Amino acid sequence: MKMKRNWNERYSIADYVYGEEPNEYFKATLANLHPGKILLPADGEGRNGVYAATQGWEVEAFDQSEQAREKALQLAQRKGVRINYQVLDFQQIYDTYPKENFDAIALIFAHMPPEIKSGYFPQLPDLLKPGGHILLEGFSKNHVTYQQKNPGIGGPPDVEMMYSEELMRELFPDLEIITLSEQEISLNEGLGHNGLGSVVRYIGKKR
Image (cartoon, rainbow, N blue to C red; front, side, top):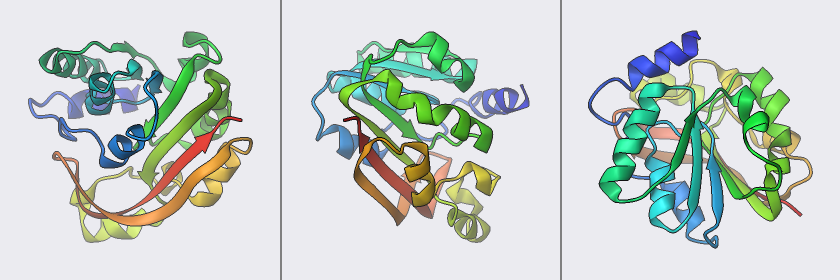
């Protein structure tokens, strides 16, 4: 409940915390995939889900914040698209969405406690159709040093909520790895992500 309250407070401002434009890695990855049905857990204020809808994807999204959902639906209306956005905790995902239902699942800066990652992420491929993809961009465990130099880059307060290449292999052992790397990148995403940071980028394909 505390985390939900914190996110509601963060999203209560008029500005979009991470901007209204999609994440660049998400945008570039979608350009190489044929539009279908996509799930976006922890989609926040909807910048990525709304973008996917403008590209012809059927979008299912969720977040634990009611404020996030409200702003996401406002953004979708301004962009002239529709998304199905629910308020859920990550633990409800498998009771909410059917198996083999999605062509892609996108985890964009979806930073969860380790017990959520280890307990729920490995089952995400069950929600994919054969040949479907999981794509992820999230701060790496080395990102802590960037936060110390520049708090404006953002990221979770706990290194255990961040990612590593090894962790991605552990979370999705049965997916074919299309892309997996740790990179230093420059972010300019609204008020929340500004400056140099370290991220893990991943694309995995269900066989």
